[in-house]
Length: 360
Ligand code: ADP
View 1 (cartoon, helix red, strand yellow):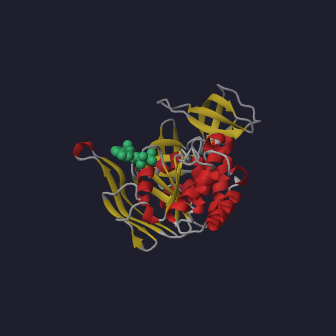
View 2 (cartoon, helix red, strand yellow):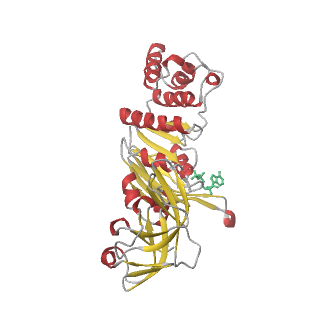
View 3 (cartoon, protein in one colour):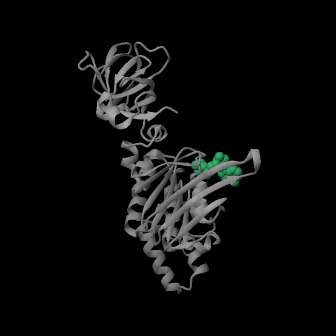
């Protein structure tokens, strides 16, 4: 097991005007045994950063340390890591047992009995011990991914690297494997880096999230920290589904003048915002309340555009009555609450659920 240090790492692909900065001066300390999830939209540099840690890609600048050693000059094999990919990367002509034991036979001096014992125990851990004589083609996607994980476990590596391992599975299996990988990581305590663009995986897996956008580190924190205290508008919009609502406005004398409503920020101005200027107010759909009548002096009036029933909840799409631009925002309400399209409502955003961001 090992800690990992990513120190001022930048990766450029190509030269001159055509070059792409895939990873932009990222520094990060990952503790021994920690489960860290790299999350961000497609193209944000997650895989490149992981591949640099793996030694599959060479950084343009910066250092990678695994354990206490700088590993910049070491190839993937010498870094003692095990990788799991979304396409499983199993050998189709080998049985499950052969797939799992192949690496051990090639690169260790373990006896045949020791290898068999190790494979059996990993197969039991992944609940694939009945499949050891099957070939990958005879297995479901979920079972193949279990084999790929089993193969990573038998290597007893310093570090697990997992690149979107669940993206080829259907929703139900994905949920099952999320739990399985969490359990596995917890039981084995192996330092794990996990790449995903899926915010559900990001929120439910891992001790800490590393949120990336355009190769730049946006926030590092526990999933709850990133969700409840997003460092910027990007993180706020990326985590949460449906996304946080944003209202841009100008702050004057403690009031945010947005399109279609004013918002009194005096309570918050002392702590979290500058005196005046452009600001973005954010509010999550589940934090906003809709009233039939005005009940506080904090509401603004809106018209119900569309109601989308989801079962226990409904999503209500609204437009502020006085707005001059076409801006829809989403509010989550109880699924049993009657509300009709075209009706007028009063929108309340509780003070404690307001997020403020610098305007982009
Ligand atoms: P993610 O994993 O977040 O989807 P990647 O790390 O794959 O993002 O890519 C980050 C950026 O680097 C993208 O703009 C991508 O096009 C670019 N990139 C990745 N690999 C290469 C490569 N081998 N050659 C050129 N550009 C690349």
